[in-house]
Amino acid sequence: MQPYELPLSAAAEAIRARQLSPVELADSVLQRVERVEPHLRAYVAVTAEQARRAAREAEDEIAAGRHRGPLHGIPMALKDLIDVAGVPTSASSRVRDGHRARADSTVAARLSAAGALLIGKTHTHEFAYGLTTPQTGNAWDTGRVAGGSSGGSAVAVAAGTATFGLGTDTGGSIRVPAALNGVVGLKPTYGLVPRHGVTSLSWSLDHVGPLTRTVEDAALVLTALAGHDPRDPASLTTPATDYRPAIGTDLTGLRVGVPRNYYFEHVDVEVEAAVRCAIDQLAALGAHLVDVEIPMTRYIQATQWGLMVPEATAYHERTLRTVPELYQADVRVLLEAGELMPAGDYLRAQRARTLMRREWARMLREVDLIAAPAVPATAVKAGQETITWADGTVENVSDAYVRLSSPANITGVPALTVPVALDAAGLPIGMQLLGRPLAESVLLRAGHAYQQTRPAPTLAPAV
Image (cartoon, rainbow, N blue to C red; front, side):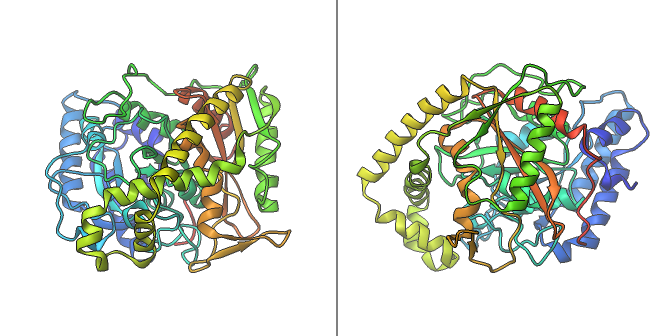
């Protein structure tokens, strides 16, 4: 096995045991980038010299006995919304040409302090306003969509051009590409991970979180990221926690909610079968399955769009009026639509979210987590605009992908996507676990226990 193939936890242990050096790992990952990046186009920019310099510094520190922890010497990819001092933050948009960050974002600073090495900045659907990331090819089939908006980070992790990545999630933008590329994606509780220095799409829905190859890896990254920052008004004052899940597969006593509505409606038959099989595996590990009714389902998509569209337009108000021609057509249409949305609609969406949070809290008192599909279909072909379901219903691709992920953004609850199978075309299928606010440890425990019953994760074979 080449160093770039190692999941984070395995690479960290090898570095700690002095069996692998950060320089060897960084060189292996950068060589992988050179081989496959022309096919995948996951990166906006690769910071190779910066990564090699940081790897040498990490190697020297570790040799001198100053080992900082499991992220020390580990290569990472950051979505190109996340500021790193001196490095461009383009948001994959011509609007940001020439923009260079003056200071680190909170998350970049925390990962740097933990010793992680920046390999580069990854593509996003322009300003995170979409679910496909059209610049980037899927790691398993480059003729299919990568998912979005954190498609670049998901593809980099799936292809071995980064050991872990960071993304943002406003309606599913971590979990959708994670599911479509066969990696783990975690959207933490709203406010758990600070967003200072991260370009916003919709301030009341935005989250920052990790994309990794294993659940254990996601826990390691979350441990470094979480914690209060007063520069983010929504940042929670939650005490620091070590999220690493306990070793073992016993889930006895865990109550897993299985939705009887919404999450299994208009879902591909292979996706449903694979996710239900994974849920049965949770039961085989000791979990107790409980039927649950998802509340207020008729309002979910209207609430998501009712919040996101005006907030996004408000953020882009100046540039939308001064340089509208620099936006991609699909994003410009959405931003201009936000200018036409009445204030009353936005307020009604706020009220609906308040009611939805209350009803979800009531539902989650009956179970410890909910298990469901992450997305209703695997990766569609690039350029495909609609999905036709078995009953003849035609749905826009972005609407389909966001439909099962947006409830966690509206309510702010944590959600974890775990790969569970491949469909007949060899494309990944993901299961989503959702829990109570600040119950990341419960989700990580369940996801880790499930993964321990599966073969070790492998890199995507497409390239």
